[in-house]
Length: 462
Image (tube, rainbow, N blue to C red; front, side):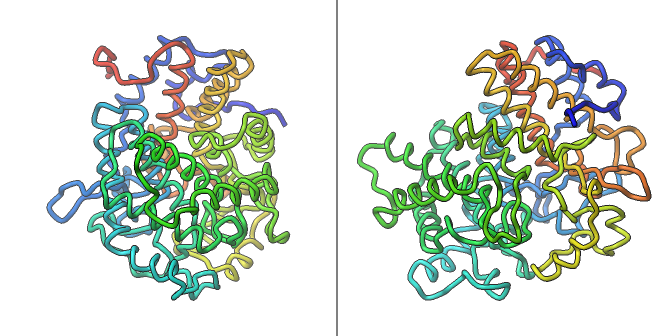
């Protein structure tokens, strides 16, 4: 089925959801409108200490019209989400509050890893701990989620077998260093070396981790890509600082690069080929390898885009086919929608899914739009600009309407079927979606000859 744009939940956005590319003036008008409605206000998700002071990281889901998410796992701070958020707010506002907030966010993650996870990595690197086993070993890995308000480790059992999250931190940290926004300190260099050595020791290129979606153990292309992007970025850091030595085993970066590139060639454009029982030929997580990581060549990126069309729904994009998370009537099936599942429990949950009833996630349309924007900017092919507009329009159409129980003008995590109606799930607004949309609008403005950066002359609508 061709990818189409549905009727926007917010009628005021209909003028921006057209087939033909927007004008630069229209993009600026759109930015002003969304700013006036608070749609892209990521600051509402800043974690704060007991005195109300921001601590640096963001909760996964921001406070909504029903209150906040304090009682759910979505109030935790995920490394993956935070690193993409930090990159996005820096990219779109490098010299303003966005850049400063990005530095504070990455600093908080680095402090957490150095304080609570460094010793765990050393045990693995030195051969004193094996973390490649079943659920009993998952808490012994570097934790990919922590308590944002305190910066402390969350001691509840969780599947921390997620190599992509470590890769995203390394990559994002390098981007800000390369831009001169966040020069490396000795401690942060040490941490990077430790993380790379850890990923080498566990042979991350062949590791069956939980991937972006913290689920089925497999060799995920979307876990290999962020680590490869991090390796290439750190190599740039070393080249830009003559005399610097890698702060770990001397051949770690070359080993990782060689092994990861070889592994990705055997998997892409699929997400999973090993083990065969968990095979996935299309997964929304792969768009991040195209944008913002830019770790796949254009030809492969276009193949990934073709695959993503097969999981694109009428509102948004499925994570993958037969995805049972937030499946039909999910809250009736599971009293705790934030429950974390073991591999065995996932088998039972997956039995509840029927084709076409997968949740449709709002993370992906903005990133697909942004990637088409990068393709257009390098080729000036009109077909890419039209696709950039198509997916931006879809992202805008999914912004919540006035009847949403969590509030109007919000970026949802996903839409799911509840009692026969597609509606936003509880994790609304999702900060990751908000910042993805910021990046999509940024790339559209650049495609149309603008800067994408904030302007003091931008008119704010009432």
